[in-house]
Length: 302
Image (cartoon, rainbow, N blue to C red; front, side, top):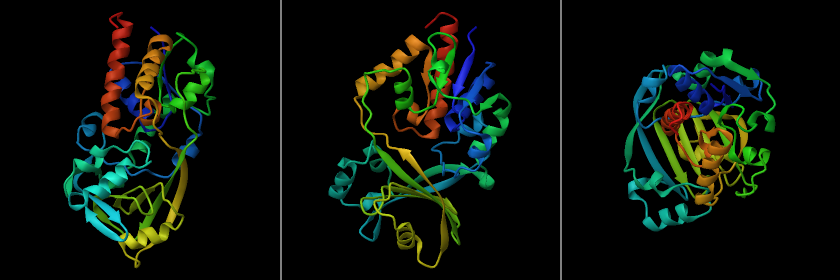
């Protein structure tokens, strides 16, 4: 039986580890960062559309209301009440792969789930699988040698594309800025999601944490003050730069993912590894699909 290596100890890689472990597979995790680097990274704001993840990963969730708004020139509107022409202008503009369904399928509110007690799911999974992680590993073409082992890759597709020198995809050099803020005096017991074409792309807030994606100007304090009130005290806890998921040919993308599995034994998992927008809920489902494909391939059934 070939060994299984997970590339990356981010959320997707650790979800893969959890599912592999639950199904009796042996695995190792290759991670280029040090554990200290991971633990000091800004905590993301995750929310889930169902509580199925808690049946797989031992983390308690609480049910909360998700309210989605559109921020248009100083006015905050429920999604269900915005002008369709404004919505079309936003979803048709160059904002990566932001899908219309993310906005259009919600009314004034919907149901979501968040971790109880301000738990950090990534850190919980990191502790559970730390003994399997090789920190400080060099991620290079040697890891992806053809047919030597089974790889579950969570590194961005463009990195893998460069390592195996594939010429079928073209990635533009595009980046987004993400601000992670902790706000004193803010304590939300629900989830607020705000889309905008004025000042930022999307904002997600719950508890005392705020994530602002792709601000169009650098005055983050003004944006937050306009939305939540000038009386609150806050500071930008961290700022990270991520590469934007730009549009690539969908047929080529799927074909490349298939060929990576067929020719190299590489299964891609996660938003950046598959180069498509996915929620954590989807990644859990995809991890089960990957494990089933690995099992079938080892039995000669795929």
